[in-house]
Length: 148
Image (cartoon, rainbow, N blue to C red; front, side, top):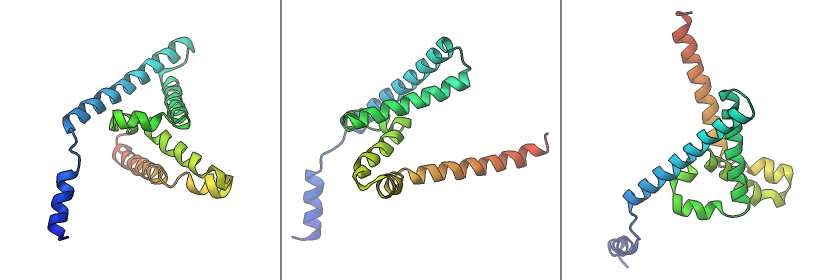
């Protein structure tokens, strides 16, 4: 089969995605996670009598926990197939990536399985986060040093 005919066959049989629908669903699901996060902050700050900053930390921990639990029971992938980027872009997606790698490599042992393989996917996110935080911190010090 010629390359052009093959490309045309693939193009014709590739399912078309409804980008507008996917964008709306992602927006609504991501917004719902934001609303859930704010609700958790409000609940934690009110009932635990802690500051908003500390409540934000507890909210992040709670969302990570929920993402890990959903991954362990096999629900997260099913939810992502419907919710798309609205579910895997927030912190829940990061938790899912870490937990799914941990579940996949757990049989290889703690050091060679979990320790060596769990950060394969998320390690780059952690490194880029640390490097960018360091860089922006330096920029902030340089810019605001004269103002202090």
